[in-house]
Length: 389
Image 1 (cartoon, rainbow, N blue to C red):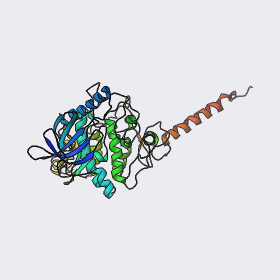
Image 2: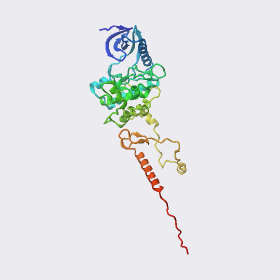
Image 3: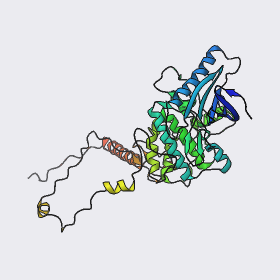
């Protein structure tokens, strides 16, 4: 049954409804199945509101059309039919991460890491193009039948180098997956996507939303102030990655998604056959076994095979590294292993007091006590050892 036509495409059935319009399964002139997304302006819009809506749609079109990555839903065509604008994308046969969680619960550690590797690869590529997604959530990650993950809907993407299109102070995105700075209406960068990735990973691992409430205000208040309970039973690498993604302040999160890829690849979990964890531009891939053998250092020579000249030559004196101007590394919590600065009173994760700070405090207190004790002390006069004759 046909629902009519838009442009050169015949609408077959409705697939869903998004923030900008409806999504249909359509057929092109050559019979290929595609997904067609429309934007329909409601009645009563002012001229400025209509202009902003058109600008948002054109921004989505430019952002999506410029991205070509195996883990990003590809855009085929962009057009307009009267007052209806539309964008044509490849039809993805599968279900979203949100639908799979709703049907089966949590995805498990291995599957969640596989999805994260592929999504991070596509996001790293988009960030290199100056594009921030701004609406990462389980419903925008499609899982194909072969297991490959594809990131969809760059409708809220902001093109960083294109000034004047996205205004600071405008809050856009899905409430439950916003970063704190996005919820406050501040200017966002790639680290905002990293927070949304952390919220999505939390839901994939637990099967429940990290921030949920009856009203948007309650959700935003939790995003700004609530600290999530740690997820138990996770590998340490996954737990540290999740906790760092969910930091409230952007400067405490990962600087870019390639750092997330490097962390998760230490688990040895490979992406699906159809997906890839490599990042176009700067490739971040685990070394293959053949490469590891090729670059492995030769075994040390035995004493018997070493030459006499080498044995008789004196060893070079060891030089101590310079200490002036060298930044001291961060300390580690003795209980949970989380990084902590030298001046931090206690670990932010488990609350363990900082031993170095306590030691410096006791030393300073003892020095003050010694100075106070010596303040009123007058040494006795020394007497000679001889007697007056």
